[in-house]
Image 1 (cartoon, rainbow, N blue to C red):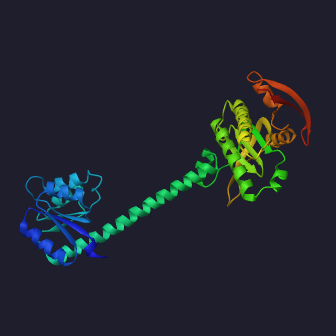
Image 2 (cartoon, rainbow, N blue to C red):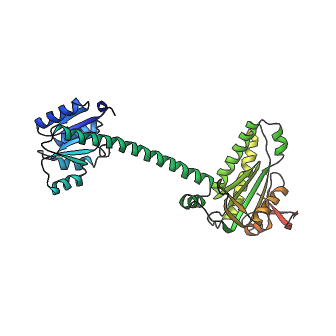
Image 3 (cartoon, rainbow, N blue to C red):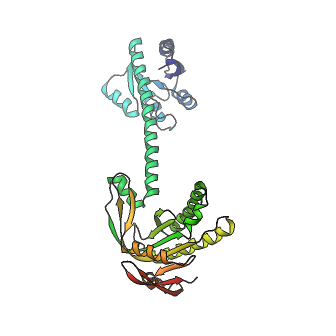
Length: 349
């Protein structure tokens, strides 16, 4: 530590004390400023960055205790260490000084060795405090990044469980609605595109899907290749889960149509919509992924595979909930593995 880089303010109405203490500390390489009263001291502190204040208690006008209290109310200077210079050594006097925010005291008359020892101690403590404060800020920033990352990866309640306890128990969600989307002829188009271009296309499309479903209080569960799955009603129940997922589908459909008018790459999508019960939870021990499982998930993927391009295709279960709110056209009956025949409908909008 270079003393010449450390700045000390000495405050005392006694010229002899100022000169004596100033000379000792200057000879040790410290940068010294002097003040003979409290108001001058506060003005200097506001204008300069001091590493330490040596503050006389018995001064005319504002005494050292009141100066110390005032310093501690000013955000820009309140953390400056203060060492009192005092001839008062009764316990109640010292308690009053520490209560005002003082860090230490030097008894008058003081000698060179004691002055230097206490000054050096508090200068070093100041360095440590500054380093600790910087470390705390860095840790706080790092923690905020972790929290934001968890909130971006997982549903908020699941993220909070993980951050608080390190785990999140699986849960059954009885009333949710789902949308599964994939891109028509994706494999064939992908063969003739550069990887970077293909990634940029998918990222652009899925990012907009994310914005759309979030606007309608749904969340994306996952993407897989050109496939996209979102759900409404997780992790909090949502009475409008069915209409929210249909409105998401309408907006996704419009987005793709409008995008095709402006983009060189033209895409068509298939969409399957369903409602039902799912189980949701964290999968994995080291690399966490939130996923959902159940018959409703399997059915929505089967619906999506059977859907007509650029149509909104949904199950009868979802139709029964929404038929008073939207117009539908009865569609084909599809034969699904494991679930038999499922009656389907097209949204007419």
